[in-house]
Length: 293
Ligand code: UTP
Image (cartoon, rainbow, N blue to C red; front, side, top):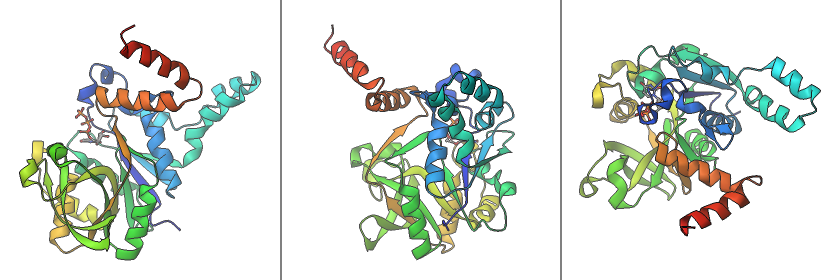
C-alpha cells in the first residue's frame, strides 16, 4: 500500500504568462510533443501509487477534466479504422486513475487551491500528494522516494533541487539540517526568493509535495501572504513552527518549467529530440538552423 492514494493537481491559476493562448486553452493542456503536460504529471502520480487524482480547476476550465473522460465515439471510429496506436493514446489518460474535480472560484493562491480539494478526501487519506502541473521533474520516481521517507520519519516530505548559489534568488529556499543521508534533509524553515548571500542553503523547492493531512488544518489558520494570496509554503512553515516533522528529498535530476513559453519550448524540444518519429529530423534542422543555414 502506498503512503498516499490521492494526488491533488492545482490547475486553477490564470496562466497569465501564456496569454493570449490561455484566453481559450488552459495551459495544462498545451502539448509537450503530442501529450498535454497534465497527462505527464497524472502518469507520474499513478506510477507512484495514486489511485485518485483531484484536479483543482476554475469554472471556465472544464476542458482539463474533460481530457480524462473516455470518448466512446472517437474510440469506435479509431477501432473501425484499425488505428490501434491512436486508440491506445486516446485511452491512456482515462485509464490512469480515477479523476475528480474541485472548483476554485477565484485564483486566491496555491494554498487556497489545495484547500479546495479537502472535500474530495476520504477518511483513508492520511496524507496527500500535490503535483504542480507546470513542473516536470525528471526522471520520474521522486514521489516514491518521498513516500518512503514519510514511512520512516513521518510528517510531510517535500522535493528539493540543489541549485547553483548564483541562481538561488528565483526560488523558495529551504533552511535545513542534515539527517545522515545526503539526499534527505530536515527542514527547519523556508525563505522565498532570497538574495544569494542571504540564502540559508542551495536547496530550492520543486513542485512535488507529500503532505500530512494536518496541512488542511494549517491552511485554515494562515492569512494571505505574498501577492495577497494564501500560500502553501506559509501553511508548511506553520507546521514546521509547531514541531511537525518536515523533510526534503533532494532530487538529483532535471526539470522543466512548463509555466512560461521559454521553459515550455525547452521541454517540447527536449521531448521531441527523444521521440523516434520527430527526433532525428528535428535534430538535423536545429543544427542547420543554429549554424545559420
Ligand atoms: P503558477 O503561479 O505557476 O500559475 O501556479 P498561474 O498563476 O496559472 O500562472 P501565471 O503566473 O499567471 O502565469 C502554480 C500552479 O498552481 C495553480 C496553477 O494553475 C499552477 O498549476 N494555482 C495557482 C491554482 O490552482 N490556483 C491559484 O490560485 C494559483
